[in-house]
Image (cartoon, rainbow, N blue to C red; front, side, top):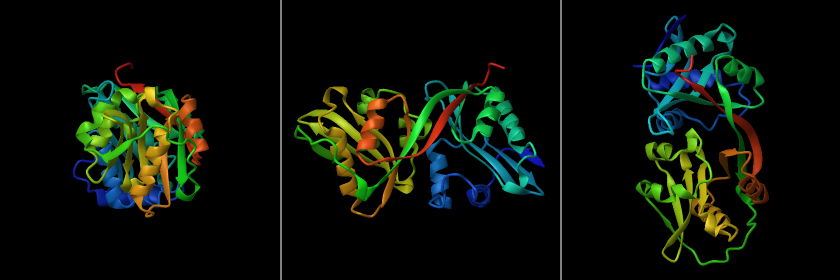
Length: 290
């Protein structure tokens, strides 16, 4: 077994290993084709030098894709995805790839290494904790079937909607009550190489809300409403506008990584017809603490 970075390895090769590795995954990943996998990696700052692959007779049998973002709170890395083909699990492969990545990160300016793990995967949670990762947040992940959407609040102020460019994102940053997860960060939105939909809501000349949707993955990445204009139907109106924008072409959307202590947003999503898909932990390692 040879552990090395992924420089020079094509995404077609990574995708074939991905298909084999995630056949028995708890969440259905059949929606992910090779292009979507690559674009998701780009969105998350994929850097092949910081990533690692496990090779047996030159066949890629396991990988950890790592993203780099020097603007994410502090210069940080993210485990975009780790996958190991079933026949090669239990051989210490994940640990060896992690050590390779840690060595590379420790020789850089990167300070933190983040990952997300399904809460039901307690074996993985404990393994990461053994390596020094700490749970930083608990996330709820939701799914909405379009025909089950419930407009929970009638709009009581006149709004103007328009699609905006990514360069306007920072105008809405102050609406957030918490720092978005790596997958949904404004940096991730900026890196998206294909289509992303940003719909803003304005009351007169005042910007009061925005929804961000990534069509390739059917993900709502963020829903932001100015605190002054909450409980006025702005969030409901933005979701309705997005559903109308989709034109019936999409049956379901996902809204991932909502902190479970944001009770207002979690309650709003439940009331709007979203159902809980799964729960994740965000975990973080201080690279230079050991």
